[in-house]
Length: 74
Image (tube, rainbow, N blue to C red; front, side, top):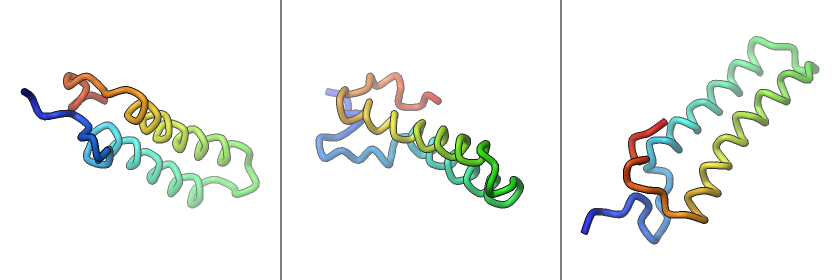
């Protein structure tokens, strides 16, 4: 039996796609805070979009066990 992509104890932080989403969020946050005006609506939209990408992955992992072929995707 192949090893589960997401073990029952839910170690989603080891998923490559989650690690990439977390990195994208961190870089977006850094860029917005350092290179854009703080009162610009674009800053809030960019940060929220990056956060949403991470949260969507978590919802998918928790509700559905992802197929093993997705292990190295994204």
